[in-house]
Image (tube, rainbow, N blue to C red; front, side, top):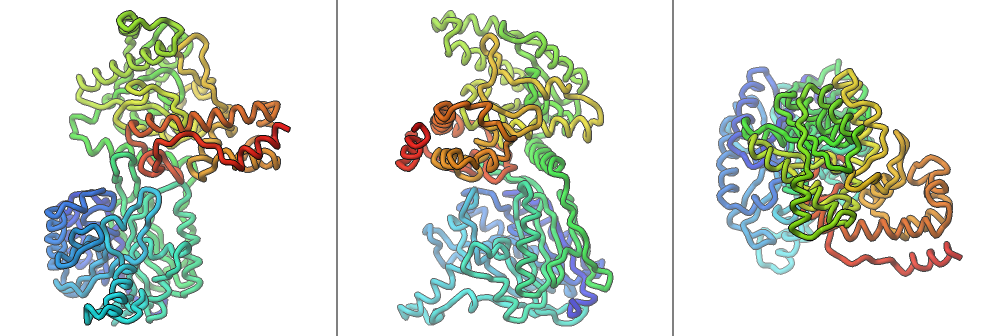
Length: 623
């Protein structure tokens, strides 16, 4: 760190607006000018700060990419003489082709000083998992190295380099600063997450003499993601002994199926891997860091798990609302009296205020009067009027026209669709949107009706199991409203769809805060890719309760015999697989876990399959 003594770096944790290079460039240019007046040596912006990261096939729009190049040049020209600006953007090479046959593009970091571009660094390690698909549009440094070596082998291009490697392409920039020339290496996001790759770009830059590494990132928020990043970078620094400046963006981006939340949490690490500066999550703006004797190790700003979860959900939902025209930021919620709808209502009131939230209860003859009373209590506590709209007339009319009788399964679906028609009509009349109140377990098992309760503008809790919804309900009471807006009996009640007499949800959600078997079943299948074979193997070995972190005795209580356990397991697996057609038509889901339904968890319509190993284990269990 002595080499950097006196260096002043500005971390610009900006809110990137996806698909709007004009707005992003305007903000970048203004911050460069302000930083120059403050005597900053280097100002750093996030990855793809001009274009946005999650913009799907907008990368294929040649006019859009041309516009990005125009604003790249505007930013470069705006940089004063005594400051260096490093910003993430798309670089286009119109004279070369990418692997999709279109002009070649790179996810890159441009380095500019005194109105001139000193160079750019192309991202080396491009993620190709979950909802990331960088290689579809962007040409990595790893591919450039492969191309150069092949061109040399074929003698087709004198620029080709024999046995070219990432090491050959890596460049350390000698940047002129107020404290002299400093050798700086620059990486883009995944280039720091080297654990699962054969290459270590950061180590190469350190070997080439870099005294500081700067990482531009667009790293989405996820539960405990920052804790993992701190450990990954600490392990890296302990190997290379070079301090790292990590700059991430804030804001939300989406791919149509999922809302991806960026929390910032930009961080400076010293050459021992200690955190010496960390920007607050979701803060949007700049913070200057002086490399002087006062830069001491600090504790990470990791938050309480439930607070972290709430902030992630709240930020994503607010950003999605902010994308709507101001006059359309009104939300209609079907308030049944259950914990899911009550918690969404409280969340929306926290975001929008009570005047922009419209609550509707839509009872039928199966509705429990005590649950309807809970809905009224929630509305009163939130200071939002509750409109009561019985659905009997609609349900009876549709049933009569279609010949559907009470007690038939189709009669339940008619009730759910009648409620959706009311919500959609009221939302359109008000000029707002209505929510889908499903949780992750319901989405997983298809426990909802298409064109009924599986419709809406967004599924805020589509990546939360029931226990987590209850956690948020308690958090809203205690920390947000600081009074009981969601009654405890609403949180504790046994859930019901109320589509027939005395109906109860057929899942073990846990009660009231203990982990439920079906909650954890869904988490295991989606986030850790378990299949029936894994469940049955753990069950036979007596390890399943521990693996799912269930209270001892849970499985014996739910499934007194192996036959009952296997019957439920196979039923769940069939429901999970057969419900894909509902999930693919569902509204977008906010990502909070390691794997969410939507583009994050890609699925196909496949028939239900039990492996040969599972069938052998089943024989063993039944015998």
